[in-house]
Amino acid sequence: MTIETVSSNRSFDGVQGVYRHASSQTGTGMTFSVYVPPHQEGTRLPVVWYLSGLTCTHANVTEKGEFRKACSELGLIFVAPDTSPRGEGVPGDPAGAYDFGLGAGFYVDATQPPFARHYRMWSYVTEELPELVAEHFPTDRKRQSILGHSMGGHGALTIALRHPDRYRAASAFSPIAAPSQVPWGIKALTGYLGDAREAWRKHDAVALIEDGARFSDFLVDVGDADPFLAEQLRPELLERACTQAGIPLLLRRQPGYDHSYYFISTFMADHLRWHAARLKA
Image (cartoon, rainbow, N blue to C red):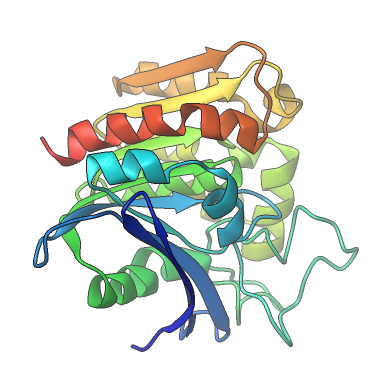
C-alpha cells in the first residue's frame, strides 16, 4: 500500500505529516495526518487515533488541536483520518446540509444507495487505515487507543466498545452519546443504514452498552455552554448506561466551555496523559 506525502514539518522535535492514498474501502483518495514524536530508531510507539466531528477533515485537529507538545513528551503517535470520502461521484446531502454526506460519514459502513459504494468509514478507520499506518510508521499495534470529538466521539466510543481488546483507552470530547435518540444521529443512521433501527444499535454507544458491550473505562469531557449539549449530545444517557453496566466513566462537565476547538485544545493534553498512562501500563 503506497502513500503520497502531502506535507512534512518538524514540530517539537518530531514530524507532523499529511499523507494521501487511494482507498480500496471508499473507492476514493483519502487524506490523513500523522504526528510521529522524537524516538530512537527501531522503537515501536503507542498510537492514538483521533476521529473528528461534523464538517471536519484531518486538518481541523492537526491545525487547532494542540496535541503535538504532549505527544512529543509522552512518546505518542497521533493519527487523524478524514471524516468522509470525497471527490468526483461521491454523493452528499441532497439539500446540501452540513450534517449528512460530505464531512459527515458518521463512522459507519453505509448500506443504502447511493451512499453504500463510497461511505465505508467504519471499515476504513478500523481496518484499512490501521494496516496502512502500521506499514509506514513505527506503531506498536499492541498499544493503541482512540478518542474523538462530537461525531468522532460517537465513533471512538462505538469502535472501542466493539473492539475492547484492541484499544487500551478510549475518551471523547462532546460525543454524540446516543445517536439513535437525537436529530443528528437519526438523520445519519436512517440515510446510511435505512429505517431498521435494530441495525443502528451497533453504532450507538448507549445501545451497545445496553446490549452487553463493555470497555475498561471512559473519560468524557463536555462543555456546559455547548449549544448542542441538551438536544444532540445527551451525555446523561451515557452516564446512566455506564452506571447500570458497571463501566467506570469519568464525565467532566467543564464550566463555560462550548463545542469548539478552543475547548478541545484546552483539555487535549489532559486526555493524552490519561491515554498514555493506560498505553504504557
